[in-house]
Image (cartoon, rainbow over the protein chains, first blue to last red):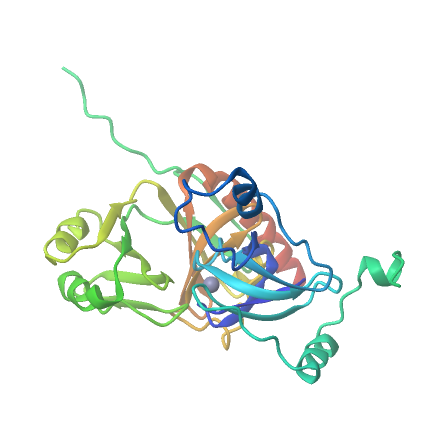
Length: 118
Length: 184
Ligand SMILES: [Zn+2]
């Protein structure tokens, strides 16, 4: 079972208590009525869908109820860090720290077992 | 002339457990879902007669009332029936949100040496005394339903659950109780 650190509960909790809430750090346009359809589509529909490091919103829905932000690797499914909602995009931990996290939590990924990881 | 209908508990008549776990429906209680801004916590604490806890996963009991920390600005306050919780909150004279959820929830008391194991049958939280000491509380998940868990003694828990889910929660706890006693 994956453990996710909730920055409000200040501890690691089971993934079962959380819900994914989409890409993080998408700013709502200041005057949404004034933007073009293309700009609206960009803001509303288009997402980066990164392979690798991605910033996401998560919600501790069956816990404190709070939304927060997480930096996560979509290939390994490892959470690199989490931080409170409202904070600017945080720098990811250094490679050594990330490696330490990776070593601590070994996750079997589709990439490693089935996929073409090139 | 119409008789007043007496309200029966959703789990009235339910009983269960095993050699190491006792399951029983908790008596009726008054419950508040309370939301308060950080700067107003003091005023509400004074009005309710207990210090609302601000540390995650903790509860405070005083004057027959218990306040459970659910989130940074959210508490579940449990007290005796007709204990005037709503009025007490209103007397604070401070902006807040208090919703009477006395009848939305019901509670199951789980006790005995296998209590933690019975709950862990459907709940992923670490219920060791180190991680979840007496007085610790948390909103969490139990099988398919959300619960609020409060440890009332080393081997006793209160499981708060929405009334429409209580049948399911009791059933899963019964299975957990059976497994817990098999494991001992
Ligand atoms: Zn949380």
